[in-house]
Image: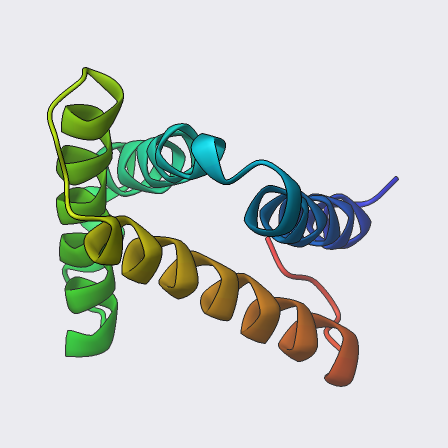
Length: 113
């Protein structure tokens, strides 16, 4: 299995998990936000050198993921968070995952990684 197929499978799995949690297991929204934002933040932390030449939108997204990580960690630790904040974070993850899936399945790429 090549890296493109792995990325496609992971993206579809993440989208399905998000939709399932949003519909059936709403109490899992904060833990799911925590897991996703921790993964994204860890990726950027280990690849910070790649951020140096990127456009401002990538910097904004990396910062937003760090904020979502902090909010979700506080919520999972028992700190009371407004439901709207958790839902907005969740909606951002769903939207970006869906757009990424649309991009991957719409445009032909020779090699993603």
